[in-house]
Amino acid sequence: MQFHLSDGFLLSYMKWREGNRVVIKNDHASYVKSASYDDSYECFKKYLRIVFAYSGSASMVSESTPIKLNEIRVGDVFLKGGSPGHVVMIVDVCTNKEGKKAFLLAQGYMPAQEFHLLKNPSHDDPWYYEDEIKYPFETPDYIFEEGSLRRLCY
Image 1 (cartoon, rainbow, N blue to C red):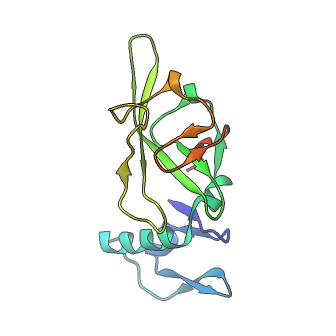
Image 2: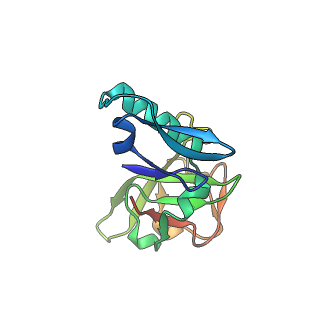
Image 3: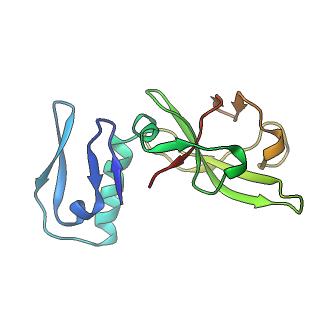
């Protein structure tokens, strides 16, 4: 597992658990060997806190590719890169007998906050229906342009 931070630095969990920690100097990240090997859950949570603090929608654009709506699957995102940018993630997908898909979206804001489901502003239920999606695509807190549906490369 590895993530690019906003400055482009690749933060690897393998290196992190080997004791390499990130130092930010002059807005650039680098590794410093400052801990011993640790594959505990607590160590993993510390790694994720750094990922959440120093990565965002700007770094996700280069780590993703556009996809078509009919290709949607759990883990795909609607992404507006930049600062500020915004990301919502597809967290569930279902398909009816006719092959039409519906999906649930969730978001967490920045800095990383509680991840929560979004309610579809067009319905009483939270599901977004494939055949109703038009661009610009509106969620309760953000509007996404065509081409914003993307699949992360990791």
